[in-house]
View 1 (cartoon, rainbow, N blue to C red):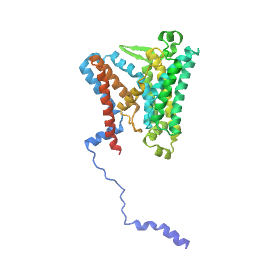
View 2 (cartoon, one colour):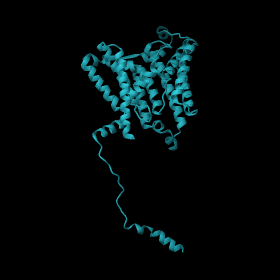
View 3 (cartoon, helix red, strand yellow):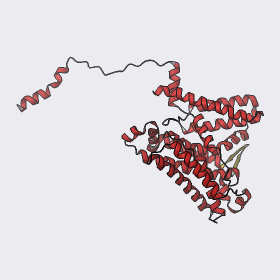
View 4 (spheres, rainbow, N blue to C red):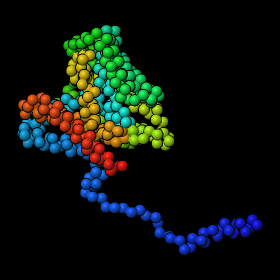
Amino acid sequence: MPETNEKAGQDFEQVLDQSATEVASFDHRDRSPVERVQHTLHSNPAAVPLIVLVMSLIVFGLIIGSKFFSPFAMTLILQQVAIVGFVGAAQTLVILTAGIDLSVGAIMVLSSVVMGQFTFRYGLPPELAVLCGFIVGGLCGFINGALVALVRLPPFIVTLGMWQIILASNFLYSANETIRSQDISKAAPLLQFFGNKINIGGAVLTFGVITMVLLVLLLNYILNHTSWGRHVYAIGDDPDAAELAGVRVKRTLISVYVCAGLICALAGWVLIGRIGSVSPTAGQFANIESITAVVIGGISLFGGRGSILGMMFGALIVGVFSLGLRMIGTDPQWTYLLIGVLIISAVAIDQWIRKISV
C-alpha cells in the first residue's frame, strides 16, 4: 500500500502532458500621450514645480531684462525664502504622512524666543540657550506626535490647538518684548550666526541659505534612500497596510513630528540671524507660507506622494513672483492673487496626476 501511494505521488504530473506550457501573460494596452504625461509626472512629483519655476524665471526675465538675472537678485530670492524653506521642510515630513502641522510657525518663534530669553534673562551661555531652544522645539513636536499617534486625534485639530497654546505661551513668556539686534551682536553674536554673509562675485549668500539647501538635500536623501524615509511614504499612503507590512507606525509618526519640531527650532535660530533680533511677533505667516510651498511644490495633501525638492521649488516660485512683481512695480496684492491661482492649480494638477494610480 505505501509503495502504491509513492508511485502515484511520483506520477501525478503525467496528467499535465496535454496542458498549456506558455508563460502567463497580461494584456497591455498602449497609453495615450496624455496618459504617458500623467505617468511621467506621477513618477517625478518635483517635475511640475520645476517646470513652473523655469517658466516663471523666463517670463520675468523677458519682462524685466538682464537685471532680473543678476547674481544679487537671484540670491536675494534665496534669502527671502530661506525661512519658508526650513519650515516647509518640517511641514513636508508631516504632510507626507497624510497629516498637517499648523503649529510649525509658532514652534519656530517660541524656540527663537527661548534662545534669546535664556541668554539675556537668565544669563546662560548662548550655546546652552540654543540647545534649550532645540529641546523646546523637539518637545513641542513630541507632544504633537504623541497626540496624533497614541491618542489618535486628527492632526489638524491637534496642531490647531497647539498653535494657539504655543502662540499664547510665547507672548506670555516673552511679555511681548523684543531683544534688540545691537544687544545680541554685543553679548551673544552666536544667535546671529546664520545671518553672516558670503559674497561671491555679485551674489550674496547667508549661512542660513546654505544651511537650508543642505538640509533639503539631506532630507531628500533620507526620504528616498533609507528605510525610515520609505516608512514615512508608506504611512502616508496606507497606515494600516504599512503596519501589516511590519512598519512601526506609531513610533515613526512620533519621530516625524519630533524631527519637524527640531527643524522648526533650527528655523528659529536662522530667523534670529535673518531679522537680527528676537521678536515674538516674527514669522506670523510661516504656517500658511509653508503649506503654500508644499502645495505648489506638488506634494499631495493626501500623503504618500511628493518630493521635498518640489517643496523647495514651490518656495522659490513664490519668491520669484514676489521679487518679479515688485521689480515691475505692480500692486503687492497681485502677488497674493497669483499665488492663490497657483495653489488651486497645483491641487487640480495633483488630482489629475493621481488618476494614474487609481
